[in-house]
Length: 149
Length: 180
Image 1 (cartoon, rainbow over the protein chains, first blue to last red):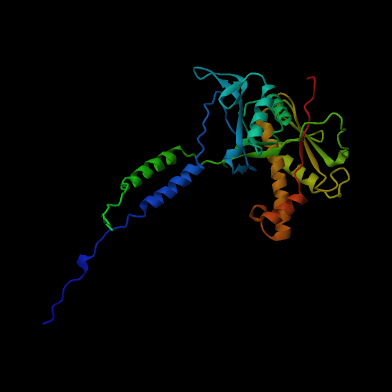
Image 2 (tube, each protein chain N blue to C red):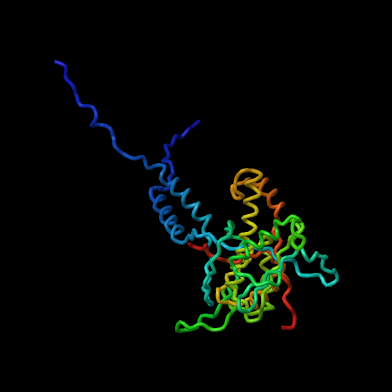
């Protein structure tokens, strides 16, 4: 009599894991490259305006931010409209010229993103813009969020 | 001659924990990454004016004057207009091509001048700028549909440049008045 033996039981059922570190490293490198580790603590309130015809800034590394909005005070109160660049409030508008010029030397393709609170008035924004012109940082971007309808 | 043969054990760095370390780093970068893209309305400012060079002459009719006053009211060529009308007016002005003698000669000569007061709310200014940008986007879409059969943002780099040359965005922000 022919004897049939069941064959299937002796194969090893394992997922090969030798390539796992490579895959993980690849992901790791992707996230390392895309991460921008720059965060500022906002000292002014910035409530974005909404717009429809907006464009994306692809290269985040070229962007330098200027925040304009009412100063945050203790106890949820807000004060006068101020300008913040990096981590400090700018007391003298005229000093923006030198600040931005230094940034432009470091990054010649600088884009200045103006993050302006929607309650701000154009007077201050125009003053800042004039300073940016003097500094030579001509590419600007008014930060707006996409309008949801 | 004496040849000593020595079986050496291969020196190895233990690599079993490599994956764990990589995972740890990966998780750190995953958490700290912000994927949200910055969006906004892009503009290029004009360089600071040279006092020795007089400004180039511009024909009055080639310039559409948009004025937003301190109450957020909009004047288009000295006539009051609602925000919703701005886009149509801007499109009519740019795409005039000589039909109306009071409006622009050709799209590449048309200049939009946007002027604001000191007390103009920023929100209204952005709304108006958005409408002007929208007018240009519509015109460019139309032009690229007529010429290439696809929308402007679906075009390649070369044709996109061509359409941009047909409708160059010339948005001028007037020099702020001195003294007030």
